[in-house]
Image 1 (cartoon, each protein chain N blue to C red):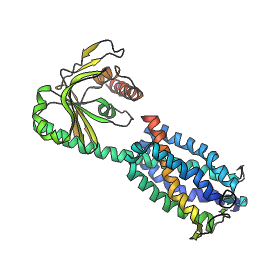
Image 2: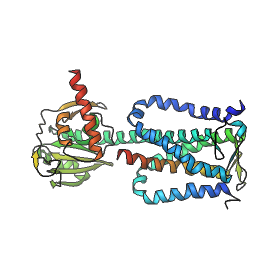
Image 3: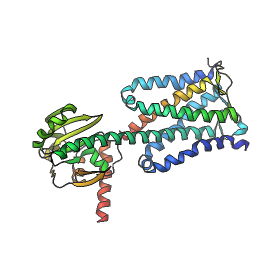
Image 4: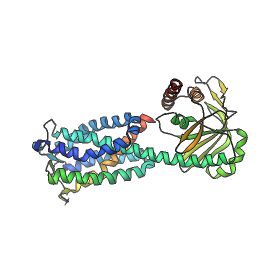
Length: 103
Length: 265
């Protein structure tokens, strides 16, 4: 999988797995911020699509080679998955950091 | 513009951030530790997750469109992107929490003070919320209101659906008082008896009565409401008997408030 689908493998290791663990451990704390997670996910998804379209499809700063080969608007499916799941992972970790700082 | 392409992309997409930064500058200054810690986290995150991504070939860069400094197979613009994204998410978290906390606190305050004022009951706001009114930056847990012990009966019927504790004599290692806890739409409110309230000393080897005087409070305007608040000196005195990091935050803010008040006189 690492050789054939590195992006999906990377997503599994660094996004999906940690997210599941964080939510399982801190469910009671994080569920209070449900509206925040919805807002951040929607905002980051829309912002990220525009950023990626310009950066990748239009200006060709970065590109994707090994992926599932399912493209929408010039971006691979994996890119949509990162835009959907990475923001909530970041928000969850940052909320935990904030809790550590301010109690 | 070739080597500046990624830099320009970052500038275009992060420049609008200046608007919320200007609008919420006070909040940012108050929460600078968290915003800064988020930036630092972004810095570390780049090395933890971005380097493997580019090394494994999840995505690749056209290096002619980047400034040059390279980390593994990733680029400096990506590092800046990660830091800015984390700081942006931190800002969004702060704005959201600030707004929602304020909303539920105001709603609960209006409700409970409406009942208290209707019965002409003297009161004072104390605890963490009073400290917040004096400038403490920590997150609010509950609203503490002190009223005379004999007035509990006057408000009991109206607050009964929201009672989660008491009214009952409450004693733990720190407090000894008449207490009633309410939960009004997710906001906890502690109503305490003002005149028979005892606190234990910091060493927890002695108790003394707080010299509450509900006819001698500070009036503070908060969101269009005139609130009667425990004096900063009295609040400071009892806060010093309590332990925990959040108490230190409160103490620091109250001391600062007293210092400014004293110097302006």
